[in-house]
Image (cartoon, rainbow, N blue to C red):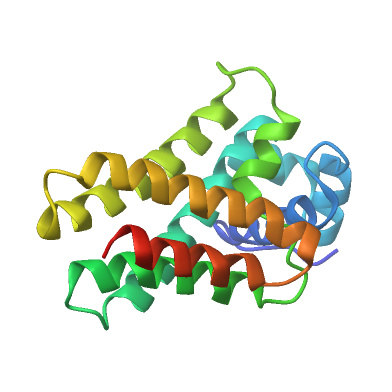
Length: 186
């Protein structure tokens, strides 16, 4: 195995874990597999993340960061708050279109970590709360009296479409959800 420079191991482990955890499931993938896929030692994995739990938290935080970038990129082209909200549905559609889509990584993680006090669940709550907050902030710019209720309704549409898209094996649920969201926000 080639030696890695300091700092390289963490990035390699995170990249490997991201692929493996999302594709195969978090509990189905051991640290031996992640380390082997990353081309690093288990000591390097533990040195960077402390534990498998620490690696899972880092994996979800990185997905959250990438998701935020995707939403920002897609919604930036829309100056109108309502159109920004509707563009979030486009961001989900783009995500579904990628190879190997297996649903929302955060919902998948929640199903594998049932304890609400688990640090993994805290990252999931943060991700979902941030999305809800983004929707609410945009809606307040256009319809402040209904913003809270609309944000709740849109989150249900997004989450329902995320789950249904796995069963449908495509983006069609997001198209339906966006059509409903357009009606709700009119």
